[in-house]
Image 1 (cartoon, rainbow, N blue to C red):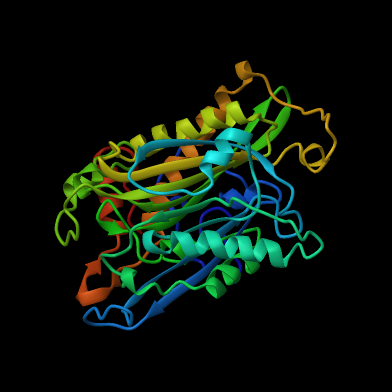
Image 2 (cartoon, rainbow, N blue to C red):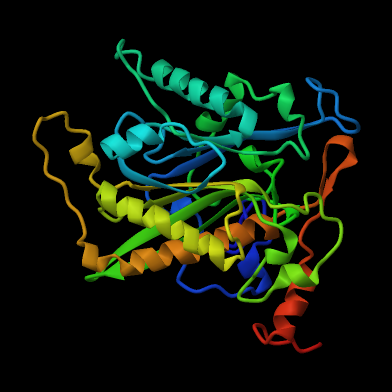
Amino acid sequence: MTTKSHTTTASGKKRSRELGIPFDGTPGKFNAITDVNGVKVGYCTLIEGDGPLVVGKGPIRTGVTAILPRGKQSTSTPVFAGSHSLNGNGEMTGLLWVEESGVCEGPITITNTHSCGIARDATIQWMVNHQPQNEDAWSLPVAGETFDGNLNDINGFHVKPEHVFEAIDSATGGAIELGSVGGGTGMICYDFKGGNGSASRMVEIDNETYTVGLFVQSNFGVRHELVISGVPVGKHIQGNEIRSKPVGSIIAIAATDAPLLPHQLKRLARRISLGMARSGSISHNGSGDIFIALSTANEGTLANDSNHINVECLSNDSLDPIFEAVVQATDEAIIDSIIANETMIGRDGVTAIALPHERVLELLVKHCVLVQPESS
């Protein structure tokens, strides 16, 4: 199926820009993290059963998302990386080594809270299987989680190693699917159906153009907090809330082809917090808001096992356009995770409603963000 590049998902679902919702900045071709050269995204989605919860049998509303910073052919070549925890009521494995070494190696996976361990372990198995020449291969992969237990039989442990393998093996570039797929399948954001979102920005520094891409698994916020393009949308769309309490989490990955060092990438990861705030979040006590930022530059250098290497990097003084891009793309990725979505019925008939597009547009017109279209 053909897509409208950056305004629809791979399957043709409308995104925010297709509805006319305005955002600052210039997106890349696909308005996704895959606009960063080499970055691939894959999913395994598990949806099965309806009705009352029977632990171990379902209903199942979960999955796995895999992000490969250098694609499948260069997983053993690390990327410079930095991380930030805005609020730590959650998990992202491997970050101690990221902070210690300044690099991240291999696929990054995201799933539900109680499957984070299997995602981590299966990623190691995948890496070992794809490096048979290295009998001493080891890995401390990054695996993140958010809680989907409102809709999913989370204690049924339905995510298996083969599902992690499928997500990694299916990773591709170009237009990607958003909403209720992969690890985002059973997620809720601002008490609407949430899940996966992505966006990108193009920035120019000293006549060089760089790409900044964001990917989020959004599962946070309460209804009244939601803000879209500066309009307090959540306060005006009440009813059918599931949580009505400040719990949930967000995992976010920022990627760029700009040559940045680990301390600079940590600064990028912190700016994801500001993008969250644009959509209304205050980062609640019960939320795990954990971020990692990475750079795909310096590939040849990082593949070099020499004791002495030379790296390229931008100056700290040049980073403001990239900071701005991170904030803008985070905001749009979060909103797209709700916009490019559909109502889902999960365990025990619990229903996460989709954000009503027409009502959002009415509110943006009322607040003079959009102009009322002329009737034909």
